[in-house]
Image (cartoon, rainbow, N blue to C red; front, side):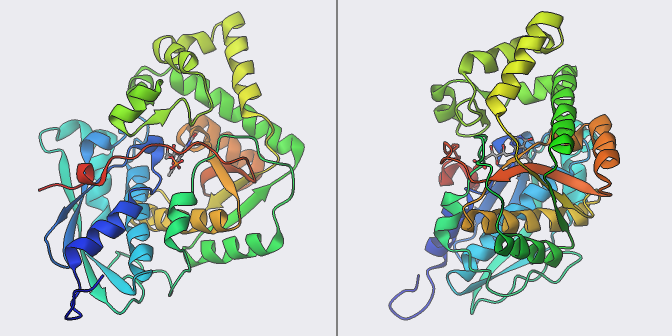
Length: 362
Ligand SMILES: Cc1cc2nc3c(=O)[nH]c(=O)nc-3n(C[C@H](O)[C@H](O)[C@H](O)COP(=O)(O)O)c2cc1C
């Protein structure tokens, strides 16, 4: 957007790109970002520590990845306006520590942590200034609408195979980010992995600190979702509200012999078929690697959306150590950091987001 004399109206441009970047996905829909606008081309990005997940994402790497996804969205949305986004001072290790179990529990007095300075300028071009890598190449062709169309789908995908052009594009995008994409389609292997996932979910829900934290993000009713505009909505999880409340109050039900069997059977029934899993493989467990991996995941998720494909991540397979070790042993994949079901599904429900005004700080 330009004024009559051709100069940019930076304040309006920033609001426009942020209003779309708000739809960036994050674990549990925590939306851990805050932005301070200067009124000119610059802005400051902060981590909102109250939105980190220190008891599930113990290392803080997933929060770093989420912030990477957010900045990557901003960068692509800037390019759509023939603008370039420059990033300054992004110290991924500082952010990781602030979001990690130790950091988040020791500095509770200041909830906002500076992440990076952001500057828009005319002319487009690849984003510069990220630590450890020069930036993804050129114009990715991710129109604004893709950011709104992208959603997590917990609905059962159709069994139809993924077309080769989509796979090729995903592999190229992944390798730009230093990652590899693996597709797992053998029935026995997928069944075994889903068994590991369910065991990890039950174990994690029975870990008191994990349980306390995830329950604080449960939004069992439509009213709760609309009030808070974040978190895990029962509606999007395709789960009745009463079941979410039950798991919130009595996690141990999933472990008891009869009720537990019913709860687990219900989980499997609701999940439906898993025709295939996709795995992203590569460096993740240090701060700079997590930042790069997050940026890459954002781009991959947009590529998938462009091909009409939806995903459902299974985070417990990675954050639960026992599950991750067994997953690596059963697949032979050395550095998995996210595993998801992928395919064509019905259009899933759209999760809520904080209003633009709520992510802006003075
Ligand atoms: C790194 C990452 C891990 C995620 N892990 C899970 C998961 O384990 N289970 C799940 O149902 N959704 C998972 N999600 C999806 C988020 O819950 C989802 O993105 C968020 O609720 C916003 O919804 P949307 O993607 O439909 O916009 C994950 C998302 C990200 C970015």
